Image (cartoon, rainbow over all chains, first blue to last red; front, side):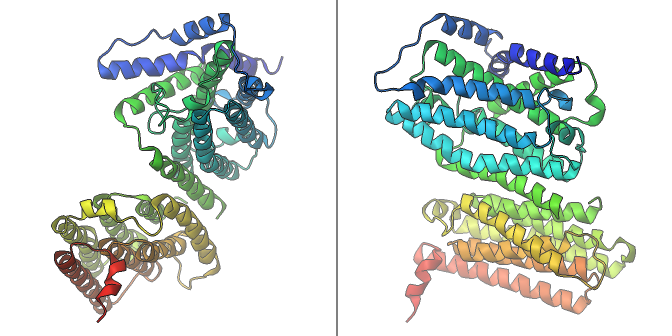
Length: 296
Length: 217
């Protein structure tokens, strides 16, 4: 089977993704001098939630029920596109980077619509914020990937990431933009605090307040996969060509990115919600500079 | 895209974007100073073949003034006028995030203009014209979009950085008299603006340029 390594990468991602939040939490605990939760805590949480039934409010419709399923399916499909350590991915064709951006957007849309369907003002607030930030984040991702694709001369994500030179200024700019987007899209600290349940300030958590049981398990698992996806993307941009062929470099690299996220979360404070768009605009500016430099 | 001049121009562009998006006045002054050092280094890096003692001396003088003297002067004015607490109350006409987005548009415009502007002499880097233009645009934009006199003064300094960067990189050899004259003008301008801002703040307890209209007799 020609795609065996790609299948293996995907299976590893599916199996190990719930490890990432535990790893981040463990690093944060280490910084704070605590022992921290077990590394496999997310697996326990998922197992617990999967055994429960779901409760639905009478104001919700099928849109609410479809939300977690569609967003999980979208992130699963997106994960098949992103190559691990820039090897061939399972779903690879010219132009797949556009599909990647849109799959992420579909997942976001499903979550937002499900949040609005509850009729709760908190979830509406979270949805409004999510869409507001996404309006800046999506062009940043596309511009950054297009800058790289112009440099590599390919619209295919795998060959595009394989063709990057790690020390080129454009690549450094795109990597910085992707790193900012990674923190934003996965609700990490400078943008959102994954620990808080304070409705006034949270973004993503506010949208999934009404999900329970199996649905919440889908949402949590989807978040783990999304973290894996963005970490793999950042790794693909940063990794020098010589290191790409090493065995297991994709998995180890992603785990290393998770450790990096933990360090960032431990050392940075959350920015005020009003200043979040400016931080996202910074990512957009970095990606735009890379793009303009590339096509000039 | 490999020469030192190219890297310096890229850093210049990034520093412009940082200036557009930075909120704290102290950091803005710091970045403006770094930018002064950057254009000073550009003067040395753009024509490495023809470095005379005179050119070195001029570049060092420019670098010292733009990179060290002006930031020090402006920081002193900022401290004396307690500008940080004023900062909280005086929002700029154009917000910082919007400034950043407009900055991207300005950069694209500068790139388009730079591509249409052929220079007779060989420039050390393809980024010289767009980078210098973008720095000028940024300076002008800061003069227009900010409300506090001190930030407008900073915009003027950045505008001059761009003109200087364009000059040294594109022309290279500037007559010493012209160079010294420009530096003296700039120094006087920053000094006078600094003193004026200080006096205005002393007298009226603010440096909101919008209210300067009221002073007309």
